[in-house]
Amino acid sequence: MSDYVLELKGITKEFPGVRALDNVDFKLKPGQIHALMGENGAGKSTFIKVITGVHAPNEGEMFLNGERVEFSNPNDAQEKGIAAIYQHVTSYPDLSVTENIFMGHERIQKFTGRILWKEMHDEAKKILRSLGSSIDPKSEMGALSVAQQQIVEIAKAISTKAKIIIMDEPTAALTSRESEELYKITENLRDQGASIIFISHRFEDMYRLASQVTVLRDSKYIGSWGIEEISNEDLIIAMVGREINQVFPERKGEIGEKLLEVEGLGKAGYFADVSFTLHKGEILGLTGLVGAGRTEVCQSLFGIMPYDKGSIVLNGEKVKIQSPKEAIRLGIGYLPEDRQKQGLVLQWSIGRNISLSALSAIGNKGWLRDKKEFAIAKELAEKVHVKANSIFDLVSSLSGGNQQKVAVAKLLTAELDIIILDEPTKGVDVGAKSAIYEIINELASQGYGIIMISSEMPEVIGMSDRIAVMRAGRIVKILNRAIATQEAILEASMTDSTEKNAG
Figure 1 (cartoon, rainbow, N blue to C red):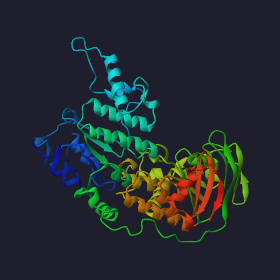
Figure 2 (cartoon, rainbow, N blue to C red):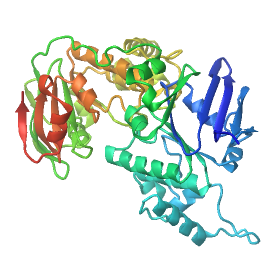
Figure 3 (cartoon, one colour):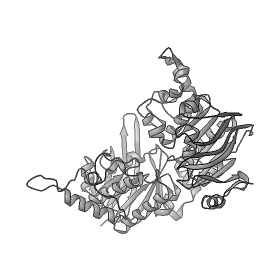
Figure 4 (cartoon, rainbow, N blue to C red):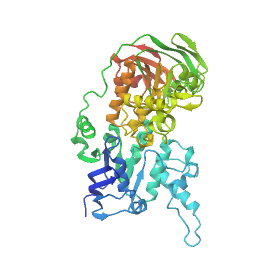
């Protein structure tokens, strides 16, 4: 009997011109949560697809409980008890929760071929309740939150009687509270005998759940360690191949005159009495617990959600912003939190995405000037260090970090004074984070005023000149960088008192 429920030896997978996996080894023990980490493009997605039967390896062997296996398709893997839960939920939004859970393995009466709806609804409800969820199995999948959809995906894996469950960035789109719920569910699955491969960019996920971590880099196996055996610094070196001595770049440039003054801004039901200033060359961090109103305030500044109280003074002139078009005309740009749904057109090229904000500048009587578009896109892609073969590559082919760089470059095609960045490093790896921090720092040094929303306290402290902490739709404290600590931010975000300035 093998010591491992899953073992991969020397797995190599090649596509035309690309070696996506290069002699990769991996071992998963029974009842273990094993973290798999690496930068975007390290080979993690191909690794998942080999295990789940989407891709057959060119070389190497795979063993389940000591028995050599070969999968021709995902059904083969599912029949052997392997299931994957992906970062971007692959559900059918217009179908019920029950239909999503049993898709592909419906309960059917043997002789009549009739679908046994009651049996499926009852079983779906039983599985969901075992996960601590009160989701109605008859409800429409598209009406659920991202966290609830993740739970349904886990329920689907349980319904196939999966013993090996792969979770691909399941916490990337979740709040801290939702992540904690997912942690508990994952631990319960482990305690019930499941073995779990947990893929994440977040160190807190790894430390909270895993007993072992394996690192891939540039499609190669780098090593595997017990969680207590490797430091953060050594793990970063393993992932990126170099030491990142200073994750947050040294601030350069000077803070200049006042660009923006917000006074008593309010939107009924969302936020109230929000006041702050932003200066040229300044990075203003906006933080607080999820649901505090951070994104809503910034969407009002950008005209997505027009405010109904208060005033905005921009470059010394009082303005009324009613639409994104008006905000851009006034020199305000916005990078949304969900880059894939709101920030980019994934099936367009890099260049076409970058030039999207500059159509008036590159157009002539309704016709686009291709040479000018190409020149602008190429210059900005190089400016933010997008890694791609050419600007004609599809944005969907890029890693998360490079997609984020393209979204930033798109902002720079407009003539802006203020750039709002909503969770700019969400879902990107540590190397890409460092590169994005450098870009933000450089933009500030060029005189842009930056408003950066972030849920990561080390990030907001490491990058911001001042930090505005929100709670329940109000700014409760503004801290200077010199005195900002995680404890001070957390205390402010959980207190009822309002103290506009500190330090």
